Image (tube, rainbow, N blue to C red; front, side):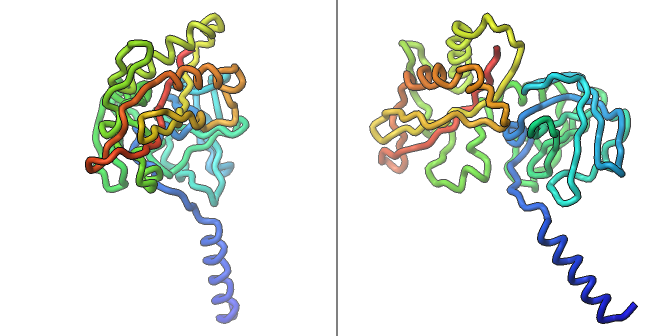
Amino acid sequence: MNSKFSILLLLFVLTYNNGFSCDCYYVGGFAYSNQTKDLVVLGEIVENNLKQNSLSIVIHKNYRGFLEKDTIMLTREVVDCSPNFSMFQKGSIWLFAIDNSRSKYRISNCGENYLNVKNEYVEGRFYGLSQTEQFKTLTLEEVESIILEPYKFPFFKSPQRLKNSYYVTEEYYFQKSNLGGYPLGNYEEVNDLINTELYKKFGHLKLNLNYLVHVNITIMENGSLIYQSIQENTDFSFPYLLGLEKPLKEIVNKLHFDSAVKKGKKVKVNLSIPVLINL
């Protein structure tokens, strides 16, 4: 082959690959990254088709998200941010945090979104915000608690959110809150109260569904609250479909906060409260 042609071909390949390489932020350990995904499931690999870049998974347990089928297919593009499927051996059990875009299921390397489960133990990065975090081993029950208690790991602590200087740690602003005389000391109580109020209105639907949203609000210097939005990952738009957005807004607007204080001065803060809706 002509040497000049070989060099040009090499340059083309390098340029092509660079132009379509994965470009994303590392969201963090599983406690954070799973909150950015539509589905969180425990599943078994029943088929790995490397030629078709696809994995067939039987769902053993659906922890969170909207899913109608017991078997789903994960797909990947050569140039996207998915992991190499060769690591997923037939018969192996995994925890997957999955993107669901119009029933196209994918997993991402932009955070810890797939964890191997062996004999009820799970190894991986769970709590850190950096890929330098050392691997830990937890029981499956402990990891399930991470999934079902997202309020213990407010997502705004991730590197993406920390770029905004007024996103601060939970202890910084959430000191005293009251709703109808009910003391709210932490996000777990906020979740319980919101679900109690929503159940009064929508419990008759009996959906048997866990669905995660992040309620975004701003606390002004005087402690007043400004509701911003409901943030969700899927295009299923569950809160809007069932008419939950307005009741959620009404409940959240009744919350009262102390002003956040930084270096002795009251400051404005933006909060993103993980709320796991159980209906």
